[in-house]
Amino acid sequence: MSEPLPAEAIAAVPAAAYTALGVAIQAYEPEAAVLITRSPSALLQILLEAGRRAVVAAAPAIQSAERERIYAALGPAHYVIFTEDGWTVEHSVECRLSGHMPHCEWLRAVRRVAAEPRAEMMGRWRIDGIDGAGLPSLARIEGDAP
Image 1: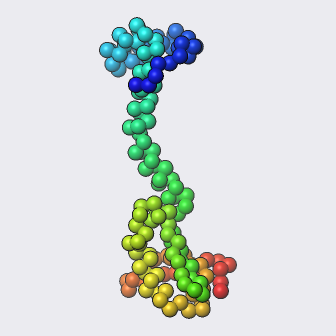
Image 2: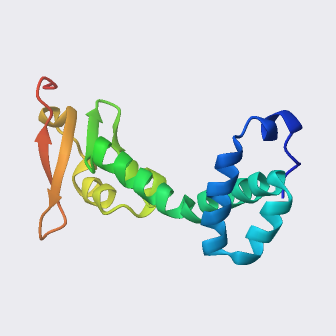
């Protein structure tokens, strides 16, 4: 448990709040209610600890939900940029965060066409898919023509 609360924090809580919380906790855990009636600061400590435990228990779900929100906001798209001196794949956020970049299927597909980039390939392209032969389906990003 954490350090005891200062007396002024305990004094600032109305007695009715202790009573209401005590009744609620007694219904949930009768042993805690005995402690609470003897020590209002114990009630606050129990509530703080319960809150901490709830946050710790919820953390994986919160992290998962936040990760999904970020993926949805930033999208799953991969892009390839061809320049005169080479090319690079811009991986999706999901691909970057998952650690799959070295094994990315989009990267393998682009490698198949990037060995000899042609002048008309220069610029930035969205990778829309991979065909049956393992080649990428590319869509030029508007305004990014060579």
